[in-house]
Image (cartoon, rainbow, N blue to C red):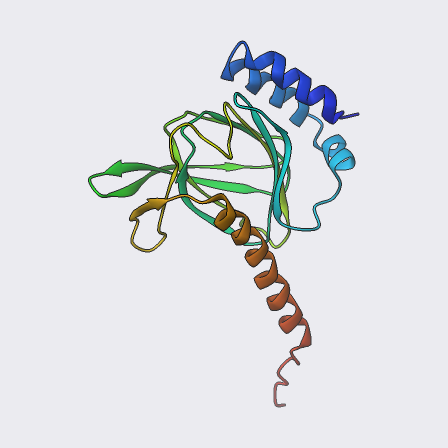
Length: 195
């Protein structure tokens, strides 16, 4: 059975060895995604739940609302991502002059793990009609990085400062939008076809 305290301790021990060791811990844990789901619970609400936080390591349980997308952003620290429910599509970007351009993508399914370098810029999409849940391990304090983080506007691709409160609000807004859409769709009367 997945034990959250044991997982955190394994991550703390692996942190001394680096990102590759953390990826191995994550891969071992993600090999049994149902156990993680059983321990952390079936995702009910979108949001960011901190499982562990220090100046050298942050572990977060992310739950993405259906069809939610997050702006391109950077971390200024490495990350290891493990998906235990749903799907997470990552689009990778690089800076060019005063904006960014797309350079690649990786889609994560249940049980899969991805490692991101400290200079990676990525955006995230949950393409499914259900909640997606993943554990992210960061090589630093995700909420108070040593170097200020940035995000980029979806439409203009222009850089601006990243804000954790705004990011948290995006999760709740995405869930509210989906719930409103679902309620509206369930109340619509199907069109009758004339005979």
